Image (cartoon, rainbow, N blue to C red):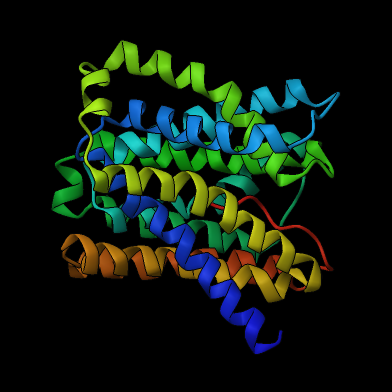
Length: 294
């Protein structure tokens, strides 16, 4: 991989890592379900006028809107109102072993002992994270982040059925289908939504636009222009930067603290994910990687 493409890959990882930080900033004024509804509206308004209508795939896109949209993004946004950005970024990494386990259950795909070890190590790391006192105090929200990761793993498998549908069409139509689902959750579980949106400050709206346009559209656009040029084992390792950068952004931008238990649990979690990714990529050829956070 040439140096300019390496820098581009790191930039995309930084953009995706900033997604959770931006969500945390915006969630200070707008509650989670309402916030993700607004974000999805930004994506839909920006993309739908410019993407094709994927005939024969609308049912699959609706299914994706449930897993990737409502269950992944929705639960994640609610969770990060109450747990640290860095902790959420690390827990989300369990989407990798979850995807392998779901592939085993539903597609009868098998994996060797090394990947099995990676899965176990990953979940040991998450258990260490959950043992951190601040996480224990907000255990239901850590659980939401874990379910969000499970949904993200499932969504990556669903993407297989969409074949060569443009990533922009996927994001745009998924947003269209997800908006009413998320709005319903906001009505059921939140209050003062309209006042929160109308009264949101400039920083919140910058964060929303950043999530909707820079993360979801620019980030994906750059990544999917880069990926076809290289083998999976050259691109996938860059995704390990996402939680590292997420933790770093949380510390620098939000004043979060890094305890020894979060540090150790994070290292163990990333070690498990690394084993899975590197083992998976040994025999890989050029292919599109799983969808990324954002």
